[in-house]
Length: 192
Image 1 (cartoon, one colour):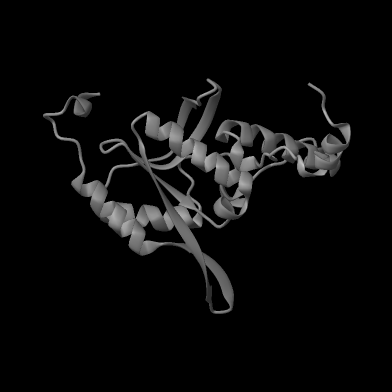
Image 2: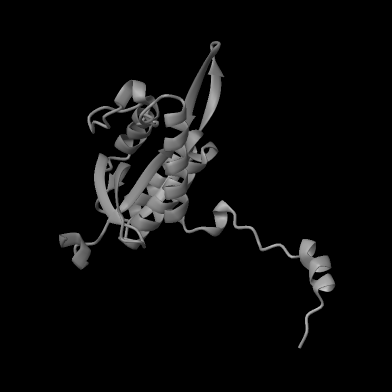
């Protein structure tokens, strides 16, 4: 069997392997790639490590549970009006499918219903790394029996100032759902 070299060379430009995009990788690999890229960009700018967003770094960089950002304070006000018991900035540790451990802080965790509500400002959608981290966080929490809901925020102008507000209607709807989904004492989860 002989191969026609001229034919092979003429078809070579038509042969292109399928290019992989970031979306073709698993969430874990996407995060690893983007973290490495972010570190490289920080090093390139003379920083040894970026500070990240750290929960509105001006107000609560250390993620202290007793300190609320403006958005969290408005959300807590709504949850308190429904008389809901929640844990703010709960530390959570979970493993991904590659068995790598991730540490998270949950904005508002409702232990009785095993629901977590995350207040998501625009950067949670605009910045790819944060959006992918949120998707992985949601998958890990779901696997551990915790339902995750994201509440987007929006920007308004008031008296010439720009302010961010959480989606109040969605927060109230979620609060009503949590209020009606408390675990019954007849269920084993109630005692766990």
